Structure formats: structure tokens, C-alpha cells
Length: 123
Image (cartoon, rainbow, N blue to C red; front, side, top):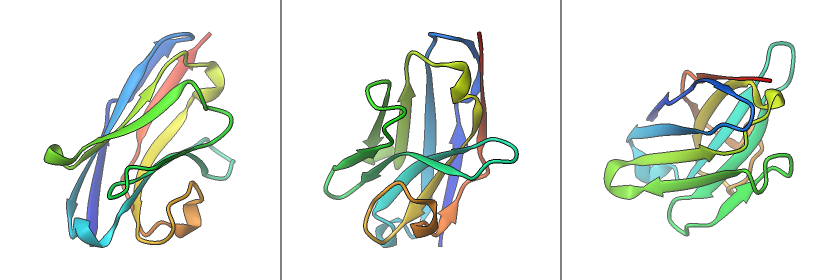
């Protein structure tokens, strides 16, 4: 099993930036895909970005492409989500998750989830 802990959320004005962190611990070799997802009340959880931690490949949702960037620090077992030019519609609870199947941004393919961190963007 893998444990994930998110941090870095907060409140910013539109156009601002935040960097979310996801520290991964436990049986990390069993999970080579780390993804970031977000959810607002009453809506389905949607994929934002994902990375294959072994191959270094990355995947992005079209709505955030060019504004968000996923990266990793293998020495710290941490995956980051740098979010720039934030918009009010980016307001959500952001989750990181670990999976072992084909890396993508579809929540159903991920096995382990963090507790989430809140991001609020005001206009």
C-alpha cells in the first residue's frame, strides 16, 4: 500500500500561482503513476495531470495545459504540481493519487489517494 500526503493549497487571486506537493511513502515501487486530480462539490473528480515516475512522461488535461506543470523530486519521493495563471474555475480540492496501470488522468485507474488540499482562486 502507498500513502500520499498533499500540501501547498491556499487562497490566491486570479493570475496568481501555487505549488502543490505530494509526498509518497510506503510500497512506492508498486505504483509508478502519480496523478493530480481535483473535485468541487457536486461534480465528478477530474484528472489534471499525471506522471510516470520511472519514464518521466507527463500527461495533462486540456483545460490546464500550458498553465500547470507536474514534476518530481525522486530523492524526496515528492511529486509537485506547479499552477500558474490561476483562474476562479480552478477552485477545487486537489488530490494526488498513485496507480500501477497505464499512466493517464482517469481517476478510476488509480489505487491510492491522499486526503486532498483546498485551492481557492478569487476574481
